[in-house]
Each structure stands twice: as structure tokens, then as C-alpha cells.
Length: 149
Image 1: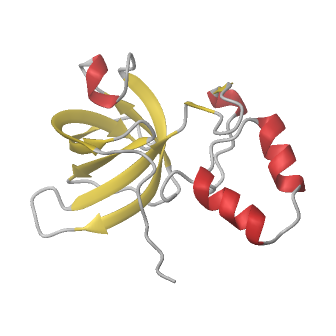
Image 2: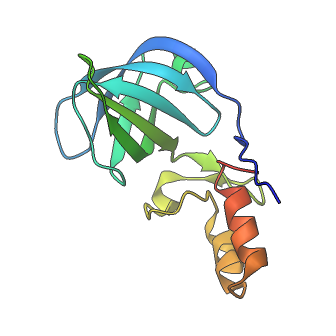
């Protein structure tokens, strides 16, 4: 049986400037946005940030990051080093999202900054965590992670 990985969200190629800070520094770094989806972005920067870190993103244009938002928080999911002036490519998941199950808005003060890629409100996370471990729970987790269907 072959397993095919398909992105849950289509990527839109973009070339735009964004600015980011890892919340531990007072300064922002310029980066080039290369693609985006409703759930996150891929950008390249001369400065790096470790996976798992929460960053703040800013753009001069509301359409650059996501609909109607010029500024938002995201969590770095992965990083790659490259041979280019912009030495680091990073994938980030937006933190202000709608719950993947019930659709309610997950506010930053209620969002868990844990490493899980699943966007669930507190109520749905409690229900999901109550499921017994097994194939069904892993399948739901994979679907909700936003990377594969």
C-alpha cells in the first residue's frame, strides 16, 4: 500500500519583505517571505531562530501575511541552513488561529505554546487528549496537524 503525502493547505508563492523578532530580543530582523498558506509561512533570513520558538511577524501590507493582519505571532516549526546571503529558511505556523475542530477563535492568551502543531481550543484539546492512544487518535492528529491528509 502506497502512502501519499498531500499538503492540507495550498501554498501561495510570494516575494515580499517581512520583519520578525523572536520575543527575546528588542530588535526586528528583515526577511523575505517566499510562500504562505492559511496556516503559516516560509521565509528566509540572514538570522536564525530555533524550532519551537515563538516569533512576532510584521508586514507593511495586510495582504502579505494573511487576510486583514499586518502583525501576528507564529511558532517556528523547522529551519534549514542554506548557501545564500539569506542563510536560513524557516517554516512557521500562525498562532492566532481557529480551532481545527469547532472553528472558534483561539486567542493568544489561551493558546498553548507547546510543540504540537494541532490548533485546538481548550475544550477540544481536552476532548482530544481524552481519546485512547491508537490508530484512530494518530490518524486524527495527523489530519489536524495541517501537513498531510
